Picture 1: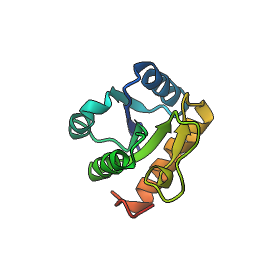
Picture 2: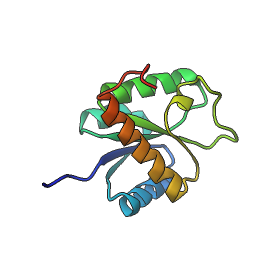
Picture 3: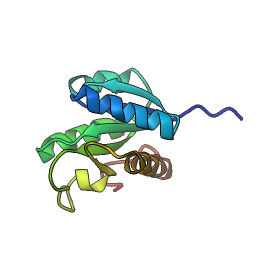
Length: 131
């Protein structure tokens, strides 16, 4: 049985961070990774089928809700990257999905992507309420 590697989109405006995420995922999980700035997230999602989208968490919850909804609507599952000093409070959109600190550590990032893949497969395309 020929299974293709997981397809992961990395949406981050910090290209060096995105490249590090790409390297970690290719080395640890043998993922097929595409990098996109957040400004082209919608176009990137429509141009390919992704299992997981690793995306930079925004400081405004409304942006995180919008991005999570867009990712879930495309059939993928989000993993948020955060460069903030603390993780968001419980009950926020970002706290409902796997989260990794910036700069990402290989074990943490791989675990978060695997968790997202597990949750995506157990919930189908998922809805925002499937947290």
